[in-house]
Image 1 (cartoon, helix red, strand yellow):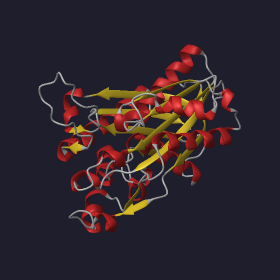
Image 2: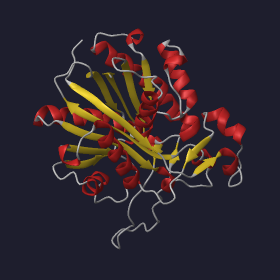
Image 3: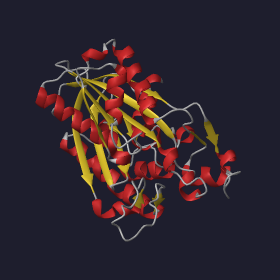
Image 4: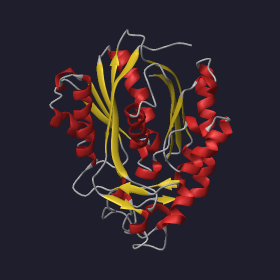
Amino acid sequence: MKFEDFKIMATASTVPERIVDNNELSTMMPTSDDWITQRTGIKRRHVATTETTSSLCLTVATKLLAKSKLNASDIDLIVVATMSPDYLTPSVSAMVQGKLGATNAIAFDIDAACSGFVYGMHVVKQMLMANQQKNAILIGGETLSKLIDWQDRSTAVLFGDGAGGVLIRNTSAASGSFVSEKLKTLGELGDNLTAGQTGEPSPFVSDQTPRSPFFKMNGRRVYRFAVKNVPESINEALAHAGMTVEDVDCFVLHQANQRIVERIADELAVPMSKFPINIDEYGNTAAASEPILLDSCVKQQRIKRGDVIALSGFGGGCAVGTMIIKY
């Protein structure tokens, strides 16, 4: 196997204080705790009130600096993966860079929905290699609550808000490495999950129907996409590294639906004990999902230095991405 010389120096995450459990949702729409739990595994989610995507990401960035004992001026690159920015411009990353005081860092956002954090890993790796930069902050951050129709139980029960991230260093140390990856986009399936239609029709557009920001999803089609393409992505990334599923200590998957994760584990013939789950607490937080789970596993010492991790995101786009990492 070939190792790239990059190390995750620190992980961090944060979520809004406000918690909305399934019982509270049942007062807003025809649903119940049993109905939601049986179909998704979700019990509660954190919902922004005063928080924004940029404020959540700034909190994560501040924690990452403290944990890695770096100054803001040491950061060369800030990338934020999000599908729910505060504005189309300025970018969330630029807002974080400015408020953090990271004057030496270039900053930009990427949007690959639920695969955004893994796609961001690829982008950060390539830029650190090309520019010989040293330190990068990668954050997945979302306030999906503003894209939800809170009377639509098919989508409102699924999503939550939060942010998580990593500080990555370009280093010659062999204690942490990016091993291999597999990214794939199936754009022909993209209309099965849409959200955030932007802007208003100009006076020159004949159809003046207001545009809707809300999630619309073909749940069955997205489920079939995930259970077919995620195992393929993981197996291909492992094969490229000359590894098998037996070599992986922990599978950190996007928390879309507990049933999807269970089906993926079954397809890979790997016990669920290797698939940590936190969707019960946070719901689906899109690009924030994998880094929030990664940070939780590191804090709980479920992931330790030297462990091999399969980090996989999948969803809107439709896109899927897997990164094999030696933590």
